[in-house]
Amino acid sequence: MYGRGPWKWSRTSGRKRRRVEGEENQSVLLHDVPRRIVWGRRSHLDATAWICDVCQHQNEPTRHLFVDLPAFSCGNCDAKAKRVNFRFSFGNLAGNGKCPIGKILDQGNTDDCLLFALAKGTEITARIRTILSGSKDKIPTLDPYRLKKMYKSSRLAEGTGGKISYKDAEAMMKMIELLETNGIPNKARTRTYKIGGVDETSEQFEDIATELANGYPLIVDIFPGSGFSDLSYREVYKCPFNYKTKPAGRRATLHTVILVGAGRWNHGDYYYFLNSYGEHWCVRIHKKTHRQIGGIGKICPEDICFPPYKFFRCM
Ligand SMILES: [Zn+2]
Image (cartoon, rainbow, N blue to C red; front, top):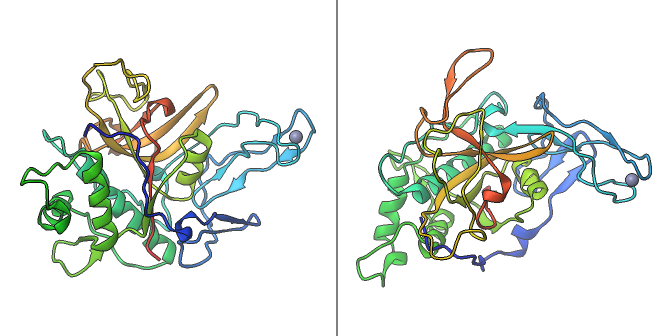
């Protein structure tokens, strides 16, 4: 998609802005989770404690839904944190034995990345909600083209003179509205899957890592360049530019993907992102099972073009 400028979502209610409350060190309470979560299985790459150089205070990691993150500043004197390594991706997290990502989709030779990101973002949101509520419901793969059809036939597409865009900022806002009000049905149309709302998050690495650690997939735009289509899993991809550094007059196409994890490793920070180029893109081999897993890559934090979009879970 292209032509997207920074814009504000105006329908954010007070409920959506409510702060996430951390509870002791045993459980996590989120306003859009149907019950208090006591999370047993943690990532083996959970962060460790660090001692503040200024006041010698020991800063324990903070407990989040899926992973423990290091304290990003000293809890006693507010001094800047030491860099503590951590990494987690929804692709590796088995919440109650289930992976929230599901089938890796392929947009093929289309420019339908936005449709794919919105449908998959809704699906992951529904799947995480199901895992958290302890329900045994199986969330199906949601069809991006069902969303396209719904948008095309809805009153939201009126006034476009028959020329409907599925990739600009306006289309995104309207399709997000559809995800909130109608949702995407399963194949048999016996159930629909909605999101509980949407919000823009901060662009800071620490804030984004925290949202992801609390189980929110984040929709973002990037400007991919050469080497993106054959990215290796070991590599952290660096886009040629972002929205702010793009040379004036340079033609470039935005690509929409979903952030599904974050990592801080020695001197570098990065995000894990879910692409829509199929399961043979960016393949890695699982250390223990030797199974080939594709679909998820790593990207530099400064490549993100606008504040990410966070989908709230339905209550
Ligand atoms: Zn301190």
